[in-house]
Image (cartoon, rainbow, N blue to C red; front, side, top):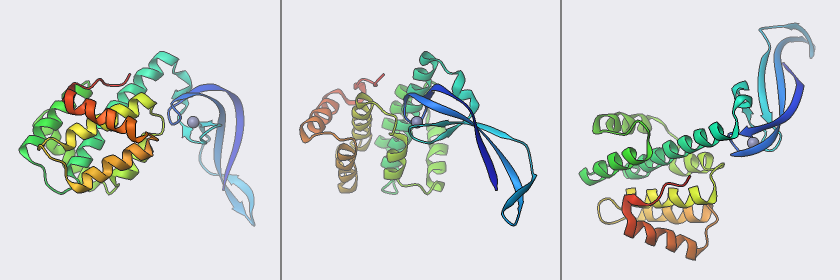
Length: 208
Ligand SMILES: [Zn+2]
């Protein structure tokens, strides 16, 4: 049995909500129970920060982030998640063409601070294949803190990645449409975003 207590409360930048929220600093300690009564503490106390809005637990380090470092880390996280989603979408048909590799390397160089090359991409693709999570589940999870502008950019980057071969497969087209719906975009907003990506290609602006 875990005994959990609230030690203090305050405001912090919740990485799941992507905004300033109230938190509860909580301490949890496992106890051995006898007839449902906690008797002996086993192991040390573990402290964590719980968001009062989304109930997600974060490590204590979350309390030390000021707004600027929080925004920076959210932006980095957004970029790497979009790249990961792009690789998942492109490889979801089980094959990866030369043009797709080129586009993903270019996308990685645009989005990731450490850049991307073919070897790293190859290793990345294999690790994603081992990961059984579906593209939809992945996007639904990681996109929770994204702003409207970030959702729009994500759709555009995924469109660019899936259209690398000059055409988009039926499954991928359905996935993009699902994305528009999931992000709460109207038909018009969706079409505008896609049109902009058709014209701009990889040069579509990353959302800050
Ligand atoms: Zn939260």
